[in-house]
Image (cartoon, rainbow, N blue to C red; front, side, top):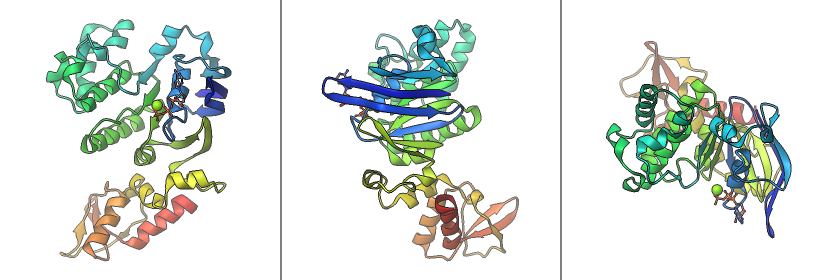
Length: 313
Ligand SMILES: Nc1ncnc2c1ncn2[C@@H]1O[C@H](COP(=O)(O)OP(=O)(O)OP(=O)(O)O)[C@@H](O)[C@H]1O
Ligand SMILES: [Mg+2]
């Protein structure tokens, strides 16, 4: 668990962190979202001591971070720097291998790990010998993600890790990251500007504004506690549609039916957002999904009932 208590950091007249307290639970992905300049990167950097706060305390597993030697602290934490920050004189491989080599992994294990991570983030293995200046912004960012994950750290700090990646690749990496996180249960503090991304990846979302946390809740119940104008503006009127992307047809209480030839079929792993879009577009009353050779029907009412249950239930 990462616990931040009463953190304050000022830069002259600017208050980047304003008496901020936050806990990231073991194994959760907590997404920090908020407007530019609200203090997200500053907060992340206090955790691996790239920024020293004026006041406040941070513990990791109940131990104050000042009780760890800085290099030991940083090796334990995978950090994806905003704006990538690859070492320009090192190849892609050597960039990814930095922490495993500091930890003295044997070379075959490091090479296998590099291949595994490049594949995971959708980069060709032929890129291993490239230098950072030979990569596009989105490719470099993916190498940054590989580097942060390389030594399999328990704690991950990710500062807009997919910001420069094109929308198609971005969705692929988001889904790959979500799968990985479901399996590995790292303790992740993830910064983004993108509400869709926060909803898809976050177990909880912290909405940050002017150095403070305005609201902290699950994606399903964000904006449901005390009414707040800034929170409402931030989440927007279409929030309900956005959270439909978190659930799949498998999450519904399904009714078995006899399929008809005109029925549109969707994979049971399709999101409710996709299912709703197909229903709206086709004008059909229902779509069909098949699980273990049995067909099930899904209609707008099923999606609505699910939404009511997760958001207001
Ligand atoms: N080294 C610094 N010196 C002076 N001011 C700084 C410094 N670092 C950050 N700031 C200021 O502190 C505030 C918070 O900055 P921070 O980088 O944490 O914002 P952010 O939420 O990460 O923004 P963005 O979404 O644009 O990345 C900003 O007003 C910024 O100008
Ligand atoms: Mg930032």
